Length: 229
Image (cartoon, rainbow, N blue to C red; front, side, top):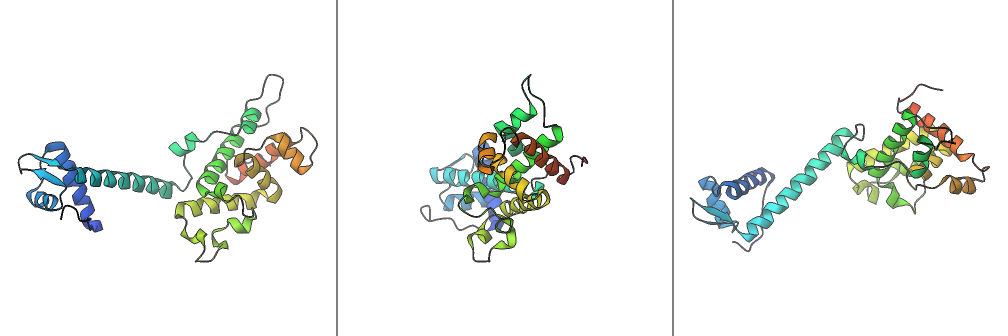
C-alpha cells in the first residue's frame, strides 16, 4: 500500500493534514488516524513515538501548497480587486506617471492623489486580468468582455477572478472612452513613454502629459475618487 497513490475525498483531506501535523509536532496522533497513516506508508514508528516517512513529507508539502493556493484564491475572489492588498502594494507606477506625480523643480505637477490612486487601481485590474498575455489579440472592448467568447473557447476556461478583473477593466474603458482608454492601457499596461505615445498618435510634442491627466481625471471620476468635471 505504501507505494500506491492516495485516493482522498474532500472530507478526509483535512483529517490527513491535521494528523500529519500532529505527528510532525508531537510525534503522535489519534489511534485510528495512526493506523490509517501507517497503512498508507505516511508514518512509521510506534504509537508513542511516531515519525513521518519520506512519502508522508511529500504529501504534507503538497497539502501545504494546496492550502496556500486556496487561501490566495479566496482573497482574490473576496476582494474582487476593490481593496488594496499585498499584490496592490507590489505594483509600481509606470515611470511616466511617477514623473508627472512627482515632477522636478522646473516642472509643474499634473497628477494629484486621486489620479495616482485611479492609475494604481486600473493597474491592479490589468495585472489580474491576464490581458498582457493576450497581446496578439484585438484590444476592442468586445474582446475583453466576459461574454465575448463561446463556452468552448479558452476564455471560458480561465479563472473567475481573472474574468472578473477583465470585466472591471472593460467597464472602466467604456466609461473613459476608446481614445483615452487606449492611452491608459498603453501607459499602465505596456508602460510606453510619452514620446512613443505622441509619435504613434501623431500628437504635438509635450502634449501627451496633458491628455494623460485628462484620461486619469476621467478614470478617477469613474472610481468615485473625485467629483471634478
